[in-house]
Image (tube, rainbow, N blue to C red; front, side):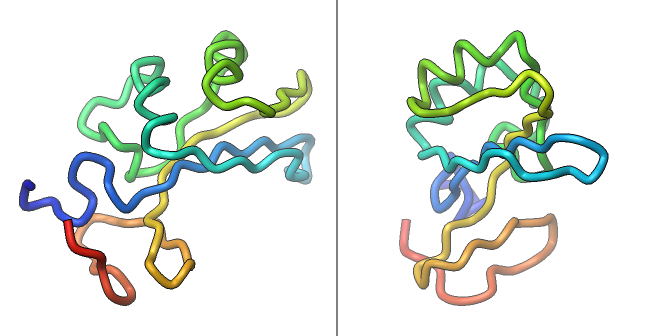
Amino acid sequence: MSSDYPFADGYNLVWDLTGFRGADEELVESVSLSRDQFLEIRHLFVLGDDPWMVAGEYRVAPSLWAQVRATVPGVRFERDADYFLGARQALPDGRFWRPAAGTTAPGPIPPP
């Protein structure tokens, strides 16, 4: 396990796929992906130094919708909405927290 624990290798993270529509950014979809689901589609994104998407959200372009839908059953993509994917830490008490550089987790961290 690397010094990046507890987020090394994508552990203790969940990825949220969210869709927004219109100028008021109405939420039209919110689906969480497991680590295994993320690993199946990660190659579709240019992540650079952010291989686990912890630095922010990434746009899911319409050209990727079919591949994402095959990995995440039940995802509905609407033509007039914009979709994004980003990671958050899954805390043991059920809360979520988006890790940021130089911050510590708010609460206990599960062992590796």
